Image (cartoon, rainbow, N blue to C red; front, side, top):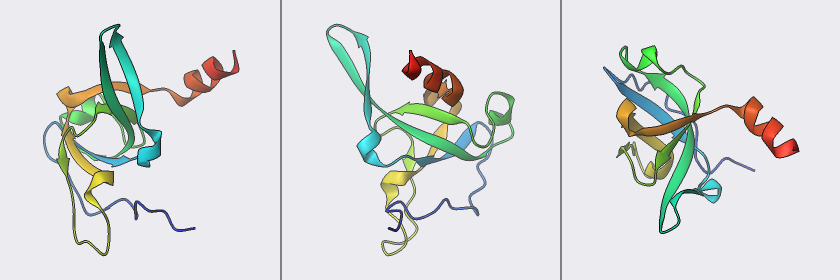
Length: 109
């Protein structure tokens, strides 16, 4: 089965504190509970490329969580990809990095 997201766009080169994120399939949308009365819908993606200032805190391959609809959606052409899976975000828009090893260990408990 083909990946509905297409593939990461390797010709995107963000500047400064911007990162290019290849988002997970939307079925993976989660809710981060901040308080009892407030829920924020979040999405998870993988860093594909980053600007020189963003390289201080992030690396290609990092899994990150952002708020739903954060950043600039990239759409090259309709037949190639859809914009919901390709984003340019700034470092301050990122909520957290996700450590897959720690997450797997937590899920085993």
